[in-house]
Length: 402
Image (cartoon, rainbow, N blue to C red; front, side, top):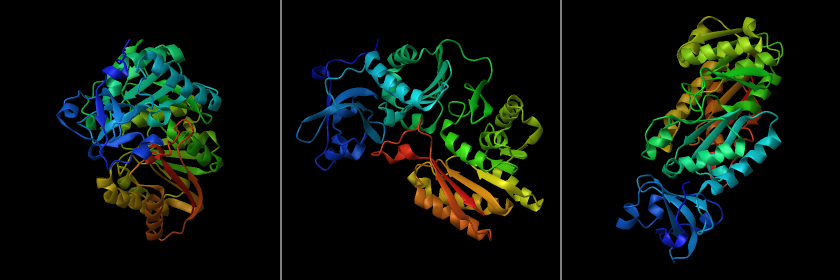
């Protein structure tokens, strides 16, 4: 069992006088490199080391995980400087996370841990029945992965635990991209996931992220409620996200567009498993090119949804990302039949709701259309938002009547 030493044996790190200690005491989970005294002793700490955080007057504030190689140099783990980071510590947090999800969902398919918002900074865990997929996206979580896995099996009864090491965040933490099987054995094929009346296929070992995006569940449901009798276009469909939900909601047809042929194969399998394959079609290709081609072909749809990857994954990429969101809206709007629905989504935490909405409205206007905003959606409640961390509320979905 991984266990830290008592607080008296732990190293200490100290905030600079200019750092906002009050914000940290009130729940802000991150300390940035320019807020911490980074002497040689602090820089010598191995990435992911546990330390006692002090304010500039040397008053203990709690336990943090330190990584001097990261812009986020310290992540708050526990306000109690005497806490021990062991399997019992993980178990308490996992039990709280599980209790919430069991109140929300009848079946065990959800995001079980949403990083800082569930008290486990940098840790994402998605649950697929008896299988859990862990993304330890911070160095401290990588160092304590055995204790986390032990607690996860104990709390959930999971038979299989997979480590997914893909993603930009691990690179920023100086971590490798080596995925692994932590408990049990890897599934020999995609798993079926029931959601919103449809059945999705999730590839937990070769797919994107953890294999399926649970965050869009309520937005899939909203779109499905507008889709009865509709022709649906789902762009950046991945494994059929909006398309399969809309078909379950009574759409007469759905076309899924994605640049990944394997993802569309999974979408096709989900359509088969959902019993809607006769109303479902796929079109592989670059989304921008396919949207342009569909307009040239005179195609029209009653519901068009565009759910692209993060075009603005950082503040440095924000302006280029907003131009891409505007372009998507400009290319998609002409494909919406009169009085139809256009759904535009962003998972870029750097693009807040106001700037994403403005870019979307500009794109619709430059297409010569007029959109009335009828609904603004976010991630589901299994992706809770920590109010002190704007990045935890990354997903935005805008639905316009055009």
